[in-house]
View 1 (cartoon, rainbow, N blue to C red):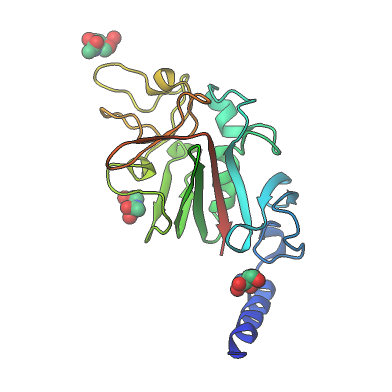
View 2: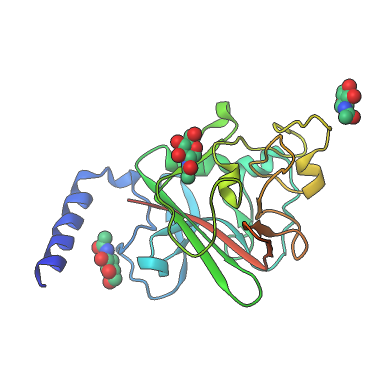
Length: 232
Ligand SMILES: *[C@@H]1O[C@H](CO)[C@@H](O)[C@H](O)[C@H]1NC(C)=O
Ligand SMILES: *[C@@H]1O[C@H](CO)[C@@H](O)[C@H](O)[C@H]1NC(C)=O
Ligand SMILES: *[C@@H]1O[C@H](CO)[C@@H](O)[C@H](O)[C@H]1NC(C)=O
């Protein structure tokens, strides 16, 4: 019984001493600041900027890179805005594709998505996640066994967008045969497909009107969303 905390302690020591400190996200799990508040503003040295951390969910350590809670920022924005980030960290925001690429190109990261649909919270975790760089139009990739109660599998949810490049209205990389523009039609930037469905998880959509998650049976309309990553 008492062997487990000791093992965790030793693993913690090894991890701390072998990693390049400047490369470590400050939002790390069980980091130097205790999980006294659920959400904290923290300086992230890798990015040389502040990020918003979830310090409590499943042990904390999460850097939030997408959040919709109030609808006070429009997500119908151009390529440069999605690359560099926008919004207010303590409110609705998008950390920026360039920043998420920078974080996930060093070490291993897991992805967690939390949504709320006017009654219930749902979430999923993929154990591996990365966003490629500008030359690959910030393609999203996640892999490994999904956990959590938010349904996601081939053809539905965010799984549909796996391995897909990003698109905005002024840089649409998902040109469809019928010429329908996914970013214009859904009024946001996302990892859209050039297929009959632009997406099956529209977390950047129009506030209170276009945030949804397509399950195998129906479309779940969402009031809040949060996408975050954690290094391990
Ligand atoms: C972090 O803290 C939680 C709760 O105290 C504990 O269950 C977990 O094992 C710790 N994780 C690490 C990596 O130390
Ligand atoms: C996402 O796509 C990559 C590349 O094709 C693949 O290796 C990975 O298994 C996919 N993820 C899931 C969850 O299927
Ligand atoms: C899509 O746009 C191209 C180029 O303008 C045009 O040639 C084609 O007929 C359009 N397709 C449809 C289905 O409208």
